[in-house]
Amino acid sequence: MTIQQVFFLAVAAITLFAAVMVVSTRRIMHAALWLILALFGVAVSFALLETGFFAVVQVVVYIGAIAILIIFAVMLTRQVFLDVGPQLNRGWWIPAVLVAGLYAALVGVLSTWSGFQTQAAALPEAASDLSQFGLALVDVNAYAVPFEVASVLLLGALVGAIFVASDRKGVER
Amino acid sequence: MIPLSWYLIFAAALFCIGLFGVMARKNAVAILMGVELMLNAVNINLLAFWRYLYAPDFAGWTFVAIVLVAAAAETAVGLALIISVYRRRSTVVVDDLSLMKG
Amino acid sequence: MLIEYVPLIIITTLAVILAILVVILGALFGPRRPTARKSAPYESGMTPFGAAQRRITVRYYLVAMLFILFDVETIFFLPWAVAFRQLGLFGLIEMFIFIGVLIVGYIYAWKKGALEWE
Image (tube, rainbow over all chains, first blue to last red; front, side, top):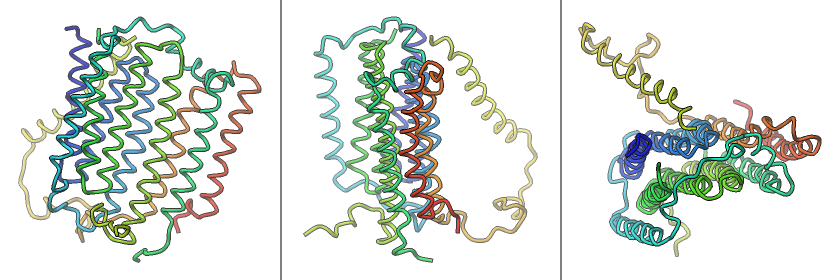
């Protein structure tokens, strides 16, 4: 066991524990706060994969924006702050069994794959250079189309979300 | 060093927990949180495969960037829908939203 | 290299230890003589009225949503800006197309009144 492995196991354990709390805690606001911890754990695992750019993006976009939006939505959609009653469906054990089966199947299938135990090769210099990613993004022979399509996707989300959210009907004043 | 399998097992566990949240939760906002966990598991997988198998090429990075954009769009529109439903029906419990049921 | 992250780990650990230490030291050494007035929630010196957990208005959500959608563009702007000198005219035109599409959404938000607080 190297230090790196111990660190990975600790991060994975914290992230998975936070994820379990997200889906099982009774208070929805606490679930949102656990979600932030889980997202931070994912950011650390991005850093362990030597993609520092996406670790930062994860913190800025996911924790800084998406988690805040979810917290706002929680605060917007409640009459009574305390969530009374069970927060899981009555037959919650059916998805639990299904998910456990899916997990066993996934790990089983993956472990038969020959590349399962691949060790990381040393990362080439070009692969950790952000400007290379910028060049690839605007290169027509590389990823120029996904780059432009992303803006169209954002435009659609912007128009749709504003249209739905500024719907004036049924507003109690 | 960490083998690829650790990341894959970790991401699969995160995905399954998120899927459980989507299937078992009553509150629509909590269901969206489950979707976020699943998208994060996908991103871990994409970056792990990029790091271990396709390192110099930027296909994995571009894919992750698009997934992040899609996640932001999905959160913005999904939560706007939930808030709109809440203002009309005063509930976010998905079991109560059965108007379309025959 | 992962060794670059060691300062980050050290500062995170220090921040967590400091946060815990401040709370523990305050609880250990601080004098505590609570009265009803002192243990009431602090609301800028006024007497608190109503529950703190009220629903907020939808305008906060609109602002946060606009922030999120323009925040995501960082993913594309930052690599582009880092590589700017090597890109030439074509890269500039592509970024103008990217921004042009988003400006349409911005104008829509403006016309729809999503940028106003009322």
